[in-house]
Image 1 (spheres, rainbow, N blue to C red):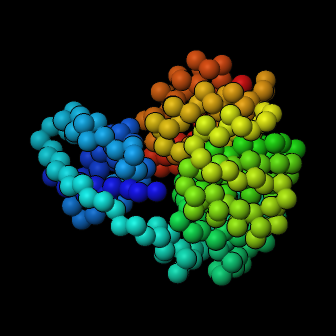
Image 2: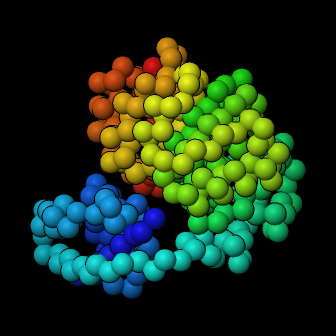
Image 3: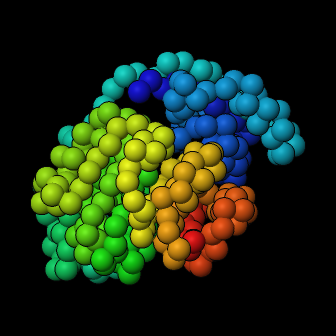
Length: 281
């Protein structure tokens, strides 16, 4: 998957301006950001990039007197999780029930469930706020369920659900590395007999049989808005949809969309500026 790297220079630079720019650029298809000394670097799939949409965000930037300059270049085709692969990550404990680790930095705590994640070119080690929030929800909602994991990444959400008692999980990802990495992690955690990893976007759901009790999607706002109807097509009455990957400012528009599809919000959790919402069909 090819990406553009867009370097934003914000003047005067402030945390509020950077956060708002990230939120607005997210609406234009950007998936992730990193802070720089002069602003932000943002990453967007080349196939989804619209410079007109980006310019509109900047032209409408509401901070008076703030200047934003950007430079677009093709992102280096590299292993985006190189740091994790070389250095690993410290164990992550979630609600004293789960511990997620890299197999090298072993946990010192006694948690009920241990999950090993080997991240290779895929999003999802448990360190991000959005992943942690969904994992917390899975502790209470996984047992006995059939799970659909949209944008599976490393497969972490499927693996957590299966370890917590889900009967089956089906995940899909548009990135070939991610789909393969999810299968790899399912084998490491000995849940591969109950996990299916598919390559493609939400259109692959047209070929998946049956409905799911629990649907998970940790993706950016625009993709959630576009794909929510397909998620709902794979739900039955009383199915639960858990969404994250977006900012608290995006909750209202996502909930409004969900309501038009027959979903009702039942819970919201926030971690810093990130949000997670739970909806029932």
